[in-house]
Structures are given as C-alpha cells and as structure tokens.
Length: 111
Length: 110
Image (cartoon, rainbow over all chains, first blue to last red; front, side, top):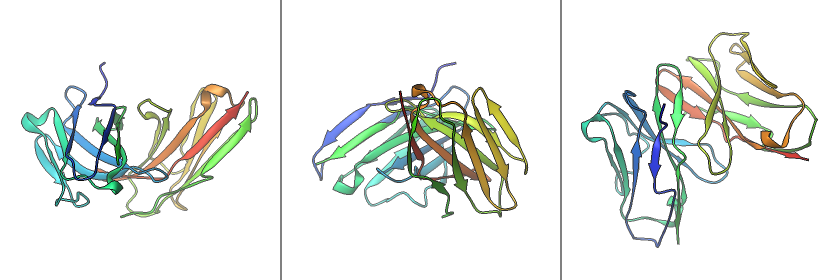
C-alpha cells in the first residue's frame, strides 16, 4: 500500500515570500489533515478535510494560510506571505477509521 | 484546545536498558489514545491505538498501557536498541480530532 506522499521535503524562503506544499493521501482515505509542528512543540492541527469539504479550520491563520482539496484527493497548503514564525515541519495525514497515516513532512525555514 | 503532556521531554539510555515514558491527557471526551514513533527524516509511524480502560498492547519489545479514568498512558521499551532512537508521540483522540503531546525524544547509546 502506497503511503501519504508530500512534497517538497525541504523549503527555504525569505520572509514575505510565498510557498506551497502538496499532499497526496492514501487512496480511499476520505479524511485529510494538515498539521504544523514547530520545534519543541507537538503537531498542531491547521485544517481537516472530509472529502473536499472543510471540517475544521479554526486554527488556520486565514490571513496568510490557505488550503484546498480539489476532487477530494490531493491537497495543497499555501502560505502567503510567510513570516519567520512559520518555520516548522508541515505534516499531512490521512485516516482510516482507526488511525492516522502521515507523510514525511515538509520542513520549512523562513529566513 | 486540549492539553496533552508527555514526559520526559528527552531521554538518553544505554543499549540494553529498559525505559518508559508517560502521556497525560484529559479524562473526559475520550475516544482513543494513539502512540506514534517518529524517526528523523521519516514519517511518524503508528505503534498502538488504545481505546479501552486497562488496555495493554505489545509489539515486540514495546508495550503500552492505558488508564482512561485517571488520564494517562505508559509506553515501555524493554532492552532498548540503537534503532529505537526516535521521538515517541502520543495523541489523544476525541471524536475526529487528534491532540498531540510534544513527544519524548529517546536516544539509545550503543
């Protein structure tokens, strides 16, 4: 079974630039999550999709972050413009009834 | 936002030592408790999903227990090996939401 695919693995940008991350979940997984993990903290939910609909985006900083999941499969997460405090690992996960399956994450450094 | 705490934050042990970590979580609105193992540059990997008070699960040298009434779970590693070096994350599931602890970083010294 193919896992959750994420790209890129690493990204270095300057503050005020834009960046986008891509996620392809496991085939058939309807629920998709984007998490932000800042160094020294646990993963924090940014947004949850059920198919192509948003279930929870209460912690997404909507002035600069956006996400979409067209056709209920792939998802993209965008930051525009980036701030220094956005430096983190961005994890995508999809879910069976029982557990989460994670991608390997994108490590973002904002300089 | 629910508070999930893990301790210790980091741990260094000698190869062959046994060790354990703690995950504390709210005792209300509990659905499941998850343990993940996250090696550097890899994806977090699910170790256990525990749902019932008193659950004990085992996978090789790693085992976990669950107490939902008092809100804690222990993860045990028996006879630690260098390949066990990783960050161990717990996640409290309430409904469809997952709340993660900050993780315990384990380093096993050969």
